[in-house]
Length: 323
Image 1 (cartoon, rainbow, N blue to C red):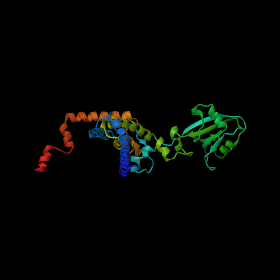
Image 2: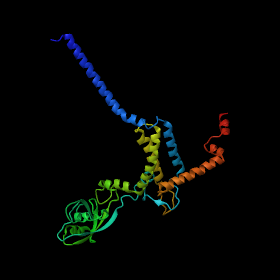
Image 3: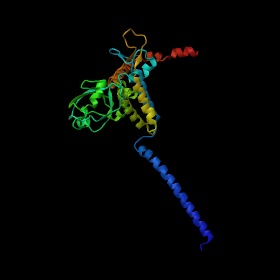
């Protein structure tokens, strides 16, 4: 038999070994969590607040030098009768023109007795037929030999068949006597990866928002400003958590400012009171900002003192005030 003291010693060694393994495991987890930061640190500088301040200065200069309500041509209406000033300035430009459908006319050739093979997602009282899904039939056969632009898809809406609408359209869908059929339909302008949003014959709010010209212009501006923001973030040395709010958030706000609508309640009859100013093209907008900034710089260089007075501060005024 082993001595009791030896047994106690062995248990102690086992406990120490277990404790060491646990501590090594914790250190291993911490090391794994810190690995991405260490990897990024090899390529990025130490945190510097001045970089974000510079990016913020660029953003503020865009707001200062870009007049959103500057109309070079005729005012483009982006509201409706009774639209409030708040709605006009915040969301009108990002809904106007959204939800418009693409119209197509497609000829289907089939043998007599062949069904179309589509499942309707519309109610009986609806005038149009929303295609919920496509199964075996004439449409599936047509799609197999047609280019993508001339195919018929689930989420399309049939508006006419051989010129017939309403109840006559539904009868034509169930008929199998005609060999050549002309189908007129409407299709959402959403990209294919977002087509799941389109769930009926009419566009919903999300679809109107995503397909509006104002939203597309905002996305273009945000993409380019966000790319600039990403470059500034990379130079700042701060962790990725600062990227969404400080850089992408600021970029999104500036892009909204550049593409929002303007409101003027004191206008003559026939003139839009909620209108789009500025420019629909990001490059044109940036050219205007550069042009205005250069003019401002030239004026400051010509007479700096006048711009000190414009900022509500002058040495003479300050001395008299405090004396």
